[in-house]
Length: 379
Image (cartoon, rainbow, N blue to C red):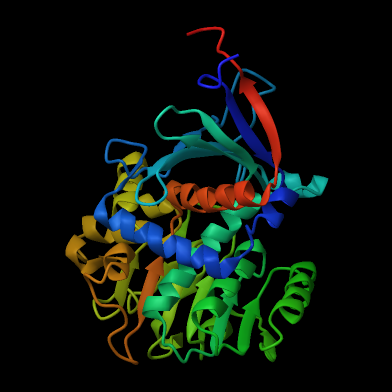
């Protein structure tokens, strides 16, 4: 055996991930902020011709001669999301997941995710880890980065559509960025998710003294300093996506949208600042799907791409959170401006947070060491 050729890596179960700090939202927000700065500098790579692709998805046909082939039902997808991130991270990796809304009937999450982290020089595996919490927390942390720069510092009221996993992590990130928050206006689909959310808030954030369960989108938005839509649904017809109307939106509000969303014409006007988590991601998406693209990818940043094609806005009217984080563009400029940020989800976010958790696990002796080989048979 040669120590030079031996390759070991660690396996991190979901419980191991918890021990290594995957739910440490303040640290996750800081990590995403550092990642966005590298993104703006260009010290990263994702898939696709423009190095900004969300990933590669396996698509199933509507009709197949093979009876065992899956149908393209709601949220049915298989996807790989590879990326490299430079700076202090210097790692690469890929998140792989399968998603099926029918999983819930089996008591399973809609999506089941795993992540493999690799050494950038050799490609050798460093860690193979459970990634449901990894993905959930990095997704929630991104609106928190947005709130740090774009929400009013004295924000007190969150308007939340969808109190599920994404809603909880978004709230956790907002609490990190805006600690004066004491009220949530929340709309959910069922009592079970609302009860779970209420229990979680009471246990985690006792400083939130008021939770109003509301019945309409208007009640979610009206009076809120921070608004986020974290709902799920079916793509295809944007008229069914939950709407934000300008007349509902408080002056000075910050809207972070990681899920299905549409805007009325007044919200699409030039005086509403429009921020993206990564402009290139939306350009890649726009090239990959039929048009109008918002029919196929329901996040609001894709609608902005359609608006460019329709001549309603120009590309230079869209802002990038990385530029703002890097200090090359202003954050919030006054207490009255309305700012909406689209959150699409980036593979580099997984690499960033996975790298931090991996290093925590190594330092604390967490995880199970596995051997790939002592010496490779083929070389």
